[in-house]
Image (cartoon, rainbow, N blue to C red; front, side, top):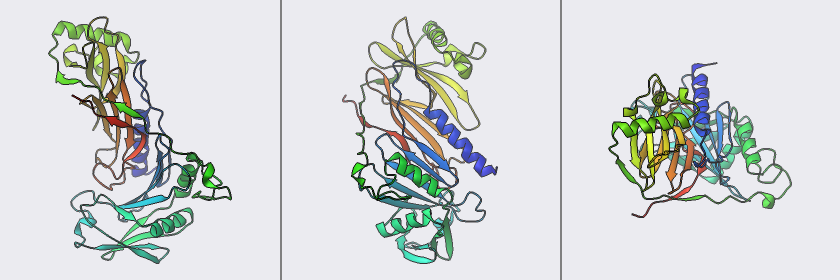
Amino acid sequence: MSSSRWTTALAIVLALALAFVTFAAGAQKAERGPSFLHKDWQLACDNTGTCRAAGYHADESGDSEGVSVLLTRKAGPREPVTGQVMLANYGDDALVRKLPKGSRLGMFVNGRALGTVAWKVESDSLALNPEQTQALLKALVGTGRIVWKAGGNEWELSNAGATAVLLKMDEAQGRLGTRGALVKPGARDEASVPAPLPTPIVKAAVTDDQLLKVDARQKQQLLRALRAATPNKEGCDVLSEATGDATDLSVWRLNATKLLVSGVCWTAAYNSGSGFWVVNAKEPYTPVLVTQNGTDYNSATISAAQKGRGLGDCWSHEDWTWDGTAFVQTSISESGLCRGIAPGGAWTLPNWVTTVVPAKR
């Protein structure tokens, strides 16, 4: 296995580990949409039924310039596929930063010109028109060569894995055997394709985000309660009998009867994760675990952001929002494969989406 393929595998394992955190009673768990990875392509569908397929340059491409494409399709009958392309712009020496202002990228499939798009360095991505998107889809399912050209340079997209990923997209959206299927379309009308599911609405509750001044005695009581309520103490440093220290706990007030307690659970080469528990403001504290992979708390929201590798070109993200009763999962996403496309990752590929209504203060 190549080093880049190994890094990709590690990133996917990390994303899955983050997504399947075990929640204690009272912390609400999201039922994420399906994901799939094959060769140079990946699929992420969210809980509304929208699916996103992202493809990249070949993993073993050597000197080839980096490129990624995102294909998005909403759930429901007769929904079109939209396409975006992003050229690798990781680092100050990225080739795209050297293109003259106003350069136009020519798109070619099997040598046939399919128009151009204007490249702007400040753009996150460039939209493909419907004709370009359809030609791209046809080439991906076949063996077509897909290239963007500018200034004597080429960015070639791999189609390795694309057929399997697009077939999974059809399956996830109930399009198999319909006229709108991307792979192996059939005679069945798309009227039978399931409609999109509604986006869950989460109303954030008002919280006090200031750290509380908690004396040493109460922190010791809190630590004992956390240890008693958390089965996997070995997976969390602050709970360890050998290394845990009550002074390392942070405490916020959520409301008149509930507190949020946090402490570092683990550290790695370029990531760390903290445990977050909801407890009663007075004994018995009765802790409820939200996550052991959190990285931040602010404005009623616990966040977890983890790099897939040290370069920071691929990430996993999760959020939980306090609704006055529990921390509700409000997002799960990753940024795509570790291919050096962009700082922070190329795309936002969600498996769980919600609409968060901000608290009224």
